[in-house]
Amino acid sequence: MSDLLEVRRLEVAYGGIRALKGVDFEVREGELVALIGANGAGKSTTLRALAALVRPAAGTIRYRGEVTHHLPSYALVRKGLALVPEGRGVFARLTVRENLEMGAYHRADRGVAADLERVFALMPRLAERSGQLAGTLSGGEQQMLAIGRALMSRPRLLLLDEPSMGLAPLMVQKVFEIVQSVAREGVTILLVEQNAKLALELSSRAYVLESGLVSASGPSAALLTDPKVREAYLGEAA
Amino acid sequence: MLARLRKNPAAKWLGLALVAAALAVLPFAVEATAGRGWVRIIDFALLYIMLALGLNIVVGFAGLLDLGYIAFYAVGAYMWALLASPHLTANFPAFAAMFPGGLHFPIWTMIPLGAALAAVFGVLLGAPTLRLRGDYLAIVTLGFGEIIRIFLNNLNAPVNITNGPQGITKIDPFSIFGVPFNKPLAVFGLNIPPVTLYYYLFLLLVVAIIFISLRLEDSRIGRAWVAIREDEIAAKAMGINTRNVKLLAFAMGATFGGVAGGLFAGFQGFVSPESFTLLESIMVLSMVVLGGMGHVPGVVLGAVLLATLPEAIRYTVVPAQKFLFDRQVIDPESLRMLLFGLALILVMLYRPAGLWPSQVRKREFAAAEKAGRVEPEQFPDRTDASEGARL
Image 1 (cartoon, rainbow over the protein chains, first blue to last red):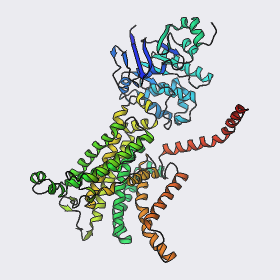
Image 2 (cartoon, each protein chain N blue to C red; image 1 turned 120 degrees about the vertical axis):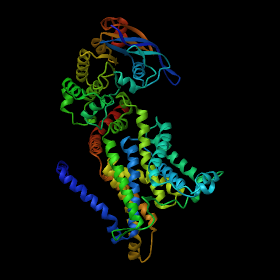
Image 3 (cartoon, one colour; image 1 turned 180 degrees about the vertical axis):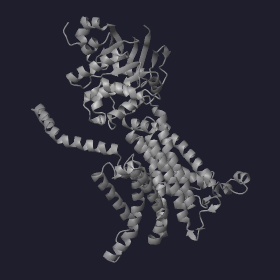
């Protein structure tokens, strides 16, 4: 399997503060990789750098074998890299259907209608509410909509930023089921999560970020039983 | 009923034909009943419609608050003033040598040149403000509008480009196919006065601008503007080149202003910096907000109302005061602004989405109102909690 995404010595600074201090990781084709860590560890910053919402200060990002950290976000979307932003970022004053159509903004092919049906099949709740304003949906439904909207761009790599944020436990379960079925359809996923237990259960491999550095990595099953990880992120005494 | 009309193409065309006929005879009807002065007021209302529709692209479609929009009007007006008046040839021997017959550009060059120059200025304003939104953007655009006006006021020394506060006079009137607009035109025994000729010219351009606005709203670019207005980060994540799309909004909005400015210069025959004050920018913004931001018919309504109502007040308050108090108590000019402010407050209280808002805005304000009604129920909880904390 080849590396779809390869990140080497990635550094990002906000003013004088270095949020990432040289992060290395890679995501292979078809994998579901989780990036976990505490608040302020640099998880979201990593995703923002991958989606070109912030410029890295140093290091390289290689996507599909080509160096991409100098490209603007819109060019990355055309190359099949889709971001589901933190806090969902749905277009609140547009309807559910309009939101999904916006996801296919850069596409000119004729498959958009078919993809819309696929998203509706995956998330029947969205189909029921296709005419409703996105701002009137519940948090979980908005998260589904944000994922569906990203799928409308036919991504090869889906970046998910904290999909469980602010959701009721039952909704978190539902959203994660959807993430799982998207992964099963062959979309490679990089999942950033604070809910470490769920993220590790869902993913095949994971990286633990700590103060802007990768402090642990490996198969998710191994990390789940690692006493250090259990103590720091799963709320258990070692 | 409107929906049924829309479904019936024959009725739609009939309706359009009726509106067109009404607009065609309007200046004659107005002149016969209210006098020629009112035809002139309607001409200005048409110019304001162009301005309001241009600003609507920036503020209504793309959600970028612009308080210096009148600067593009000024750019278009001064461009035409310089290209079609003796000012440049009188002050610069080089120009006099280049154009021995004097500078008299035809109207056909005015529209593309005015649009292009204003678009350049639009990009000039847009480029440094790409990262700004809301209040901060408003402050910078306000500054931009004032800078343009102050430049126009002071560029008479060391080289006299704009003739300073005196302004530029003797601007050529428009002429189309050799028909000059400053003389009455006799057609089939009908004597069409200049103001009415200008009315038809402006009306034609307003129709074109309305058409462009409506098509833009429905286009890919229109969608991208809406996305940026709603959430810029998400718009980026959709693959929208937010930088170019925002610059395009500034440029497109500015072109309408530039064209309107050129028309204004030719219509008046005179331009001076006084016509391009902050108050004018605010007036145009009020038209957009009052009519219904982002909704083309609403914006047209707002422009017509705000351009004609103050004049109506001017014509009625003096006789009304004379009748009531036997003398003039309040100057109509100050009363005009007073009533104008009152009207704005009333509209914001009772129709916050504008007089004729688009469906989206209406939904959004309805949702906000619903959310507002929930708040009082939540409020006691919050005070309870804080009291508990204090105890």
